[in-house]
Length: 503
Picture 1 (cartoon, rainbow, N blue to C red):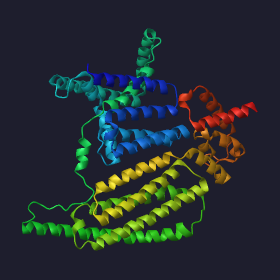
Picture 2 (picture 1 turned 45 degrees about the vertical axis):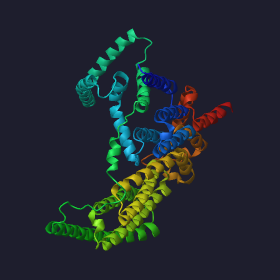
Picture 3 (picture 1 turned 120 degrees about the vertical axis):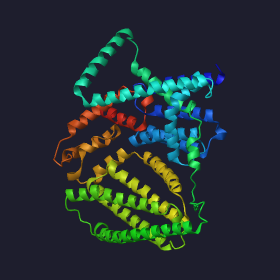
Picture 4 (picture 1 turned 30 degrees about the horizontal axis):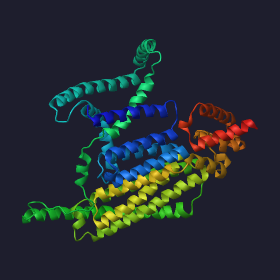
């Protein structure tokens, strides 16, 4: 066995053991940052720091930032975006020269699919040209595919047939009892978690070194190049091509012009009614205004962007007479920006009367991404940029917005804002009590307002007992966790309730 193989096996075993040591019967906290730092270290060690690309360094910064946020405020957003950052980091490790975040994610997903092959190839065989290995790999695929299909149908039947699910539970229960009598001290879940840890490390140590996604990305540039037919020198064909292009131009001009006129009317109504003369006159009216109206307006903006992308995809960009289409398209983009402001104001009215919530905050971040998309769409149309340019720039913009999203303790922001600024009759206490444990001290300090709250049907209800149960569960859970699950805000909440008990 070569020295390289030994190192890889040691790293895999170390990763599996470390994963279990850090996460067994623990919550995510400082353990997540420690394990991610370990992944970054082995990634740079196997890649070589001198060969690390900009994409690798940016994704490392994203992993560390979100990891620190998990340790600091432990929000769900920080944990999810931390995992996304790890996926992006792995993708750039596999193909360092990639330019787009979405391509890095694609490379990372392909790396997951290729992992079983790489384990077999690098640890148990000499090379990819080994004929014996190729024959065995074909047999492995012939066995794995039927097994995977069997379990897929098993899950479907288990979920759809109650009798089948009951018989299955009895069968697996008897199998479990049998193995428990043989392996009394053996933990199946510990072994599964160990394998999961090794697999995560394997995605980096045994990562794919192909450049499939890179080759695909290289086919696309940032600037549109005029495509000429090989037979374009033939006068008839060139004439037909020009006629077809002019017809498409006229169709685009008619469509963009007519929708511009329609959008002008809609924007005039919104500016008059939503911007300057809005009056709240009941829950149902405001709910419909936001929940239905907002989503439809967002759909309208996305459709507008899709239509413009279609018309400015190829040679229509080089048509000498397309100046009016560009002008109308720019006007359409500006009108969509005005429409987006109307959506923001609708969302603001709802937050003003009913407080903050995840979806309402999410809409604001989504609209920020949309305005960036409109700006880049303007650049694309006027600078003859490709759709790949649009996707590349906007994927990075979305990733940076996610990093910003992970940096705020939204649960605390929601609780403090809603308790302080939301009218008592609209205070949704059941929603506040569904938020993370770190918000419990703030809710406890405002216990007097709980009885004035309303449920989802806006009926008065008492929540004090529910709050006491949440506090008791949190204290019991926190005492059973070790330093591995430590995060600043949960510790702060535990200290708050501990000081209350002493007093």
